[in-house]
Amino acid sequence: MALKITVIGTGYLGATHAAAMAELGFEVLGLDVVPEKIELLASGRVPMYEPGLEELLAKHVAGIEGSSGRLRFTTSWEEVGAFGDVHFVCVNTPQKHGEYACDMSYVDAAFTSLAGVVREGALVVGKSTVPVGSAERLAALLPEGVELAWNPEFLREGFAVQDTLHPDRIVVGVRGHGERAEKTLREVYAVPVGEGSPFVVTDFPTAELVKTAANSFLATKISFINAMAEVCEAAGGDVAKLAEAIGHDDRIGAKFLRAGIGFGGGCLPKDIRAFMARAGELGADQALTFLREIDSINMRRRGQMVEMAREALGGSTFLGRRVAVLGATFKPDSDDVRDSPALNVAGQIHLQGGQVTVYDPKGMENARRVFPTLGYADSALEAVRGADVVLHLTEWREFRELDPAELAKVVASRVVLDGRNALDGERWRAAGWTYRAMGRPRA
Ligand code: UGA
Image (cartoon, rainbow, N blue to C red; front, top):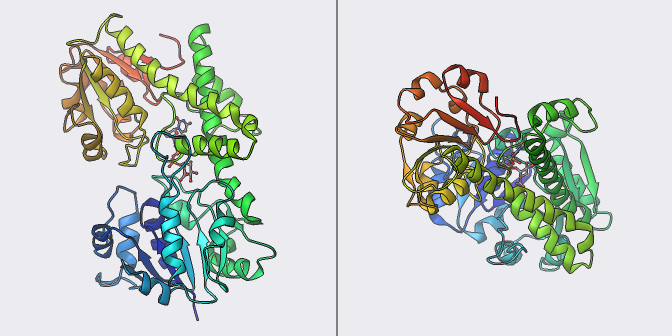
């Protein structure tokens, strides 16, 4: 009999994981405590923008014409307990208000509810990003005869479906020998493992640490190149060329070396902070003090962008000046504005008296919700109309495809600042613009 799988928590991670499990051929039941989310998912729609996810849901959600019917959603814990052979816990662990540590209350609540209903012999699999030591503690909440495994997730927003179906590695933390847990998860992931995804078995703490270590490394790479951008700015160098040149060394690698206004989102910033907080609790804080610097370099980039804009406007005040901001999300192909560098820069300029108009292809609704006092336009052309300076802050394809000559006709001043080093500077200059990018010489 094929394994029956439940997925607890249907945010980015859970909704994608549930749809992917159905795609791999399993019967899947997704649970969330928010009934509106469940209603939406049960109709094959998702509460966020994630390329390919709605299509995958529509392919499997029961009740949708032509679907496999393998994927259903519920708010009932009893149903989940009775159904599942394997339960994936995918709830989020946001940063605690006013602290570096992450908030474990959703994970704890999920384990407590699950413990009351789970069948003997079932396997519980934690996927949420948690402080090291959590799995050991959570295992104690589960009844006798129910095993726990820790299986961190490495999906990127914007590529969630692809990353889940074709992971570049599968990490499974088990307790003791954990043969049964390993065997079950090998069955769950038989297809990607068959396609060549490495399957790495570890103990609990290592599996938990792999996740935070990976995100810390990525954050470090970005802040490293942004630190080089600061030096390039001071020395007249070109950080894009520098990144290209060092990236040819495959020990360094060219990926994640894009200098600009830095990283944001719901993962990298909070994960490095929670990691520092946890290391402190463990008495190993010195090992991670460098992450404080990674965080500072990153936050400095936002201020640097604001200063570039101020300088472009003559160097003194934003009062009464019109600033167009292209991009609000923390990265392209997402509608997520959590800790978005773009929105942060737009907000800072607005709070200093600038008249800011924002346009983003998918993030408008979320941006309006968190920053209702900014101006918003329905297109890039409308956003830049009358602008004294244009800021490119999220590298959507739509912005790379803009015609600088068209935009030139409607702005008050042809100055564009590229906060993502992603526009074709030559093209903009050829259309009469002053083009400036971070960490690169003025032409
Ligand atoms: C990140 C990790 O990349 C995933 O592997 C991980 O699973 C996920 O967090 C998570 O913990 O759930 P994500 O937050 O979707 O994924 O975004 P990234 O693609 O990592 O980008 C993060 C930020 O770094 C964005 O703001 C992006 O603009 C910025 N970035 C990225 C740069 O500034 N420069 C770069 O070269 C690359």
